[in-house]
Amino acid sequence: MTTPDLPRRNFLQAIAATAAAGAVTSRWALAHEGEHSHSHDEAPFQISLAEWSLHRTLRDPSKELTNLDFPRLAKEEFGIDGIEYVNQFFKDKARDEAYLTELKKRCEDQGVKSLLIMVDGEGQLGNADTAGRKKAVENHHQWVDAAKFLGCHSIRVNAASSGSYVEQLDYAADGLRQLCEYAAPHGINVIVENHGGLSSNGAWLAVVMERVGMDNCGTLPDFGNFHIRRGKDPLSFDRYFGVQALMPYAKAVSAKTHDFDEKGNEINTDYFKMMKIVLEFGYRGYVGIEYEGRELDEFAGIRATKALLERVQTKLA
Image (cartoon, rainbow, N blue to C red; front, side, top):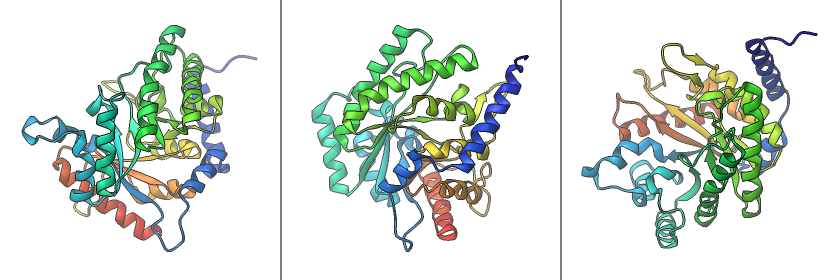
């Protein structure tokens, strides 16, 4: 029997993963639904704010705003009570208990809940080199500890790797399993975003989740990050197909927005169609606003995204 060529094999895996996603509400989704179950008279999902939506504001020295201001900004400016940190904005503070205590106090003062920390720049969990993979896992330990201290449910990681399609499955699953084994006793989930490379192939990432096979390993489907390869020869995975493949494992959801039409709809993603997919899998948790556009300033972009999500809430309630 001849082995199918790689693109065909990838396509078949995509079909298989998405078919499985559509047919089964997995143990991950069921577990998550239990954490966030709502009565029928409440909104079908909650709205949170990802700190990356404010990355230009936080990096602008003239604004004099830091990560410590994030809880107040979320609540006072946008009326949002769930926040998702990005470790880049407090990179050297993961083990600084005084800093974390102050951040936690500011959340409590505002009535804001810390949900997760998005972790970048700590090495490839899917490193092809065994020692490099182990080092990346250890680099992430401090963020598991910080997430636990702040009361988060998860850290968001990347599944970057190198090698063939199948080799990267093995490397990423191994690194994630090691990190999940560390995080499990702390009650912290390790969740992977589709964030470039093969992680932006929804089918590949779904197979990685199956290979890890741990309850505290999951996904963070991002509506806009299905670009496997950018540049002059781009390669993308269908965003609706991708979210469908990742939702059985989802422990958070990222509502990526760039630009809006005159009716307030996101021009790249049909939010009513996309959120219908999300809810069909029994997800009732937070959906995090992640505005990355340039047409509106960050504050206006966040407000436009929130208004769109609120219209979706009303229609799909």
